[in-house]
Length: 166
Image (cartoon, rainbow, N blue to C red; front, side, top):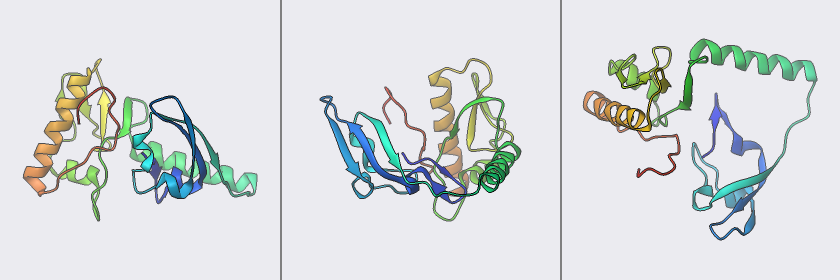
């Protein structure tokens, strides 16, 4: 995909990526060939990523540490941190926030089986009590239905699912 937060993403620093195709062949791709976009890349057609070359900016260690600590503080204040989860479940629709739409749809704290919508940030599904894949997928479908009915917005999943139909 192309994980990111607060205006930047992993693809921003990738110069080259090595992928494996379905026959086991390693293929090197340039940044342009990887086709990074918001929460997406052109890497979906490959079996897996085996390596990447990153271009990082040098900087003062204290400044970098302070920036990392500020991001960490922001994360623990605005996202569920201690509970098991897979990160943000849905892509933000253009000009809006999936978490806000889930919140105004009254879904924070809604639970199916062991899976629950976080009360801290609505775009996180928590594993509260040994949630099964079915619990999570049923909750995802319920969230999508409710948000569509209440706001007219169709939420698209951000998390990749392996071994399940989309």
